[in-house]
Image (cartoon, rainbow, N blue to C red; front, side, top):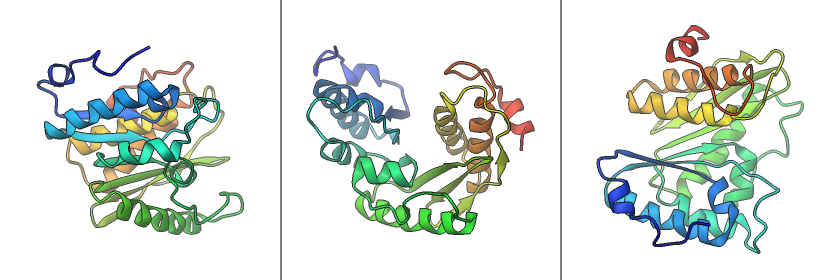
Length: 218
């Protein structure tokens, strides 16, 4: 029910250094998308680091607008973009180099991620950091393009999944944590993937993992 003008973003973001939003928010309705835009303009003017999670939900986006008509303007403010090859295609119109991950080796998937990320960076030059996840049948890993350097995480065995909800949020949180700590790219992507896999073993949509527990999985 949020409307533009209801939040004083200048005051709300006072003393902040980072603004993160999810693609779920502008998917709710047109006013929510306008509120996101309103917040991003203020966050950008204040010099905050801005990140987005390109999480696509097919059951949303029911208000007559295609994601590709809304998301590009919002993402243009971002310094860190997280998602996957297919979300980048659906939400931003970046053509996917492959149809699916089935039958593809890790090398082929990393190559496809690199091609997609190159197009993503060309379209959104502010984004110096791009991260994609790959949650396959048995393992989970990620790719991070951080400035000129590409880092690929190690493979984390998934095991028996307790609850899928929130694993992407944990990956995003791991990215933000690693970047905020100014860690090396390979450390950032390994920590993010480890956090995501840990969430798959928890019930509910929020993690109770500590930093030490995530690091122990490395």
